[in-house]
Image (cartoon, rainbow, N blue to C red):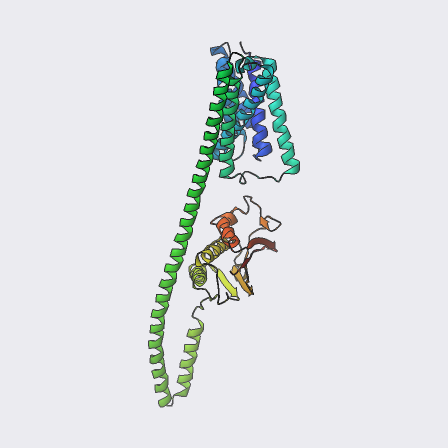
Length: 439
């Protein structure tokens, strides 16, 4: 069977349409705005297919490379990072391959036709593609009107892996079923092949899920390692700070003795005016000393005071209202995760503000407790309004910095104590509201 250049172009646009529906309609990838890309890409594809048609007059070579051309086309016309687009397109392609195989398998089983017969029949092949496009379009419409958009960032690694596993299992099953039900197969052969197919598919799917579990365990281990490292650093900083303060206290005690000796000497010499001036200088010196923040918890104190010392030169201040209860049952590790991430995100947000009045660089922390309920509010100014829906951050490029280091880990730590993390943005003041049980 030979293929004309128009047959090849039709097959190209059919495959392109299916992949484009999945990428744009399901995964929310946007098209490039540069119109010249489409013109150049279209002419390049037409020229390339024409050349391959001249080389192989049957058109088989052009058909064999259609999938590659479709993938390259989408890489050119879709927005996004290259590697992310590539593996997403490959995932979508495998899912479409699974769908096409299922549709072809159903046609094969109903019509008792071989796979080769269907592929070489333009009518059956067109019918199968049309049915696949109808299924994909229906899913896109359902998603548009009934489902919440997951967006590109909402598709998790687990979902990717399960889709790969399901697609691969489906392809194996349907393909084997087509072999089993081939007209020339004997009944014994069909029974044996059916049993082998079931075993292989179950083993393949189980192995795929096991890989997902192992991958997630590895990610969780890495996350826990980072949290432990952060906690160890906070504890180390606390002990260093405590040691430093002890040395300062020893020095201050020595200085106090010297100052008292000087004051007493001025008093004995009846130099009261000089003594008063000396005392005023001491008071001014004491007032200029930085005041340490105290929340009632050593780890949180270390995180906050370290941030104050590190970013004081940038004019960033931290104000604390309230303190933790004496009987605090929340682990030091979870407190470290919550405050390290919240303060890090707040400082990063303040750094994006162009204006530099002091009141624009204040992080306000409010800690309250009532019975076994603990409430923590952390507020900071932002350069622009943050997208929040029902108290939940929306993932956009504008507020991407808020999803940096460990926002997810912070949420997980709070949820251990039957708590919630919600967000509020009023008059360019962004607030993290944390409510959890102290038990």
